[in-house]
Image 1 (cartoon, helix red, strand yellow):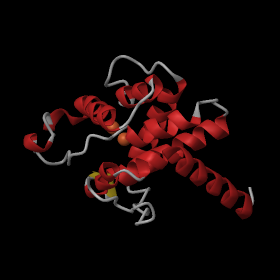
Image 2 (cartoon, helix red, strand yellow):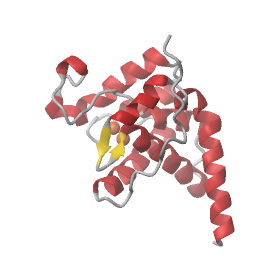
Image 3 (tube, helix red, strand yellow):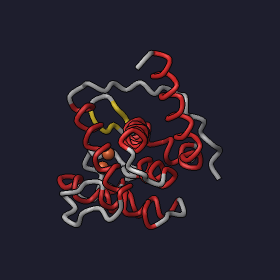
Image 4 (spheres, helix red, strand yellow):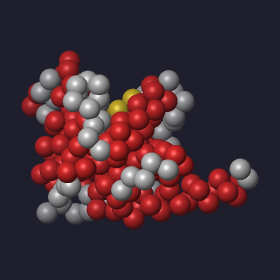
Length: 177
Ligand SMILES: [Fe+2]
Ligand SMILES: [Fe+2]
């Protein structure tokens, strides 16, 4: 693949991310997740965008035929738990600090359902993305793709192979109501 083709592919993915993720990307709570570290030096905000980006690539280039809007929205919200999971902060939402891996999909789903109108597919993505920890497997292909994209991104971030590089591009904090 030439550099130009790579550039075009990257541009297309970013356009899809903006088109389908607009509502979430511009919401105050999502933007504030930039303040919570996920893995390494990567914030939850950057990690979620990376996962949505990777999920789109897997879908497009492996021809999985996912519904892209739901894929992007579910991926962006999969870790919408809105607390620092490294700190024991029961008052701040980290109710099970030692069991974050098991409990955060439920918290993310609760928060996302409160802030956005979700489809059943988007809910399944958020609820099942930690499979096999969730025991019940994903029910739709979109949830399988996000589960895979999340594991890939988490591994790369933990190993330091994905560096935080999304700067303030998406950050335009709306006024609080
Ligand atoms: Fe997660
Ligand atoms: Fe994640």
